[in-house]
Length: 146
Length: 146
Length: 85
Length: 85
Image (cartoon, rainbow over the protein chains, first blue to last red):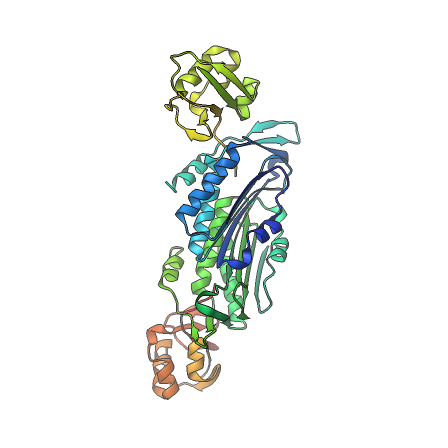
């Protein structure tokens, strides 16, 4: 079962774990990314492309399920405005074997950072607004999977 | 915050995520291992050493938090009898950065399989009872971290 | 040739619009040429595309390189490197 | 020397007890010698320790190799390779 969602509503971690049908799988691995309130960050805004972002997530999900034997995969990305502490992204995979579930989570979060049409903009308490720059390390991590 | 538990009661995933204080961390990674009902498995029994198993888990948790910059670490292992679908182990780590949270989860689950005093016994519907054999792959995965 | 272009992030802000339909000269045959043409067209284009190596592109939803041809394309998206996750 | 030994998994089953206090001969100085001594002592020891390379050990809670000395030790645990997680 593959579930992909791009949503402006808050991500409900517990509900997503339930939906994922946690009970039925041998091994599940997850990654949760949240807004960090560093340097007086007041708001993180995620810009996306209405159709292409979801299509990009779906393509990534299918690539992962072609590559590893997964019994379920959940990929939820929030877009729009969010506050420090809120969840930006949830990646959740299940498999009969732990190595596959863990590798798929790592692949998905790495590629998500370089392959999907999403852009972060930070607004700080002092009024500064800036678009987040791509990080070189992200590019390197993503290329490990090629 | 390090939380380690060896318990015969069911592992409450949602409660553990809450306890872990998910809201405060940039990145969280998790691994959940469950009883697989393969080959007509009726019951999995986990034997442990009353003091040493928990001490072993605690040593592992401290080794991980020495090695990576973690803001929280939860390591819960069930012991005693459990049924297919039930959770055997939960590993949950948080960090400001995804690479550290993910690496720590992988380290903890790999070393847990070779370094902690726990032994699995399987009982099948047809009456067979057998102790699970160590898997060579587990040894290799654990040695990657040395 | 008529082409739909969508802009994102600071490319969108510098262009002042989220997208536009342009009538492309016949000699603008690939993405690299499109970016050069937009940079030369006016001040906002010059600002948005001053550093072509910081621009990424997708054609009909798929990320692509700057040598991708434009013939038969429905929508081109132009944007800085993505930063999701 | 008096020594507490704890057994686990199929070592426990074959020994028929979860643990015992033994009075060790003076020449049994390390873990390897202890395992050999238990294997030679009686039938259940012969069964449990027929394959010494399948036996793992912990001294006072820390996993250790078969050359670990026994002097001053409180508890030795003997068991097959662990299979948790």
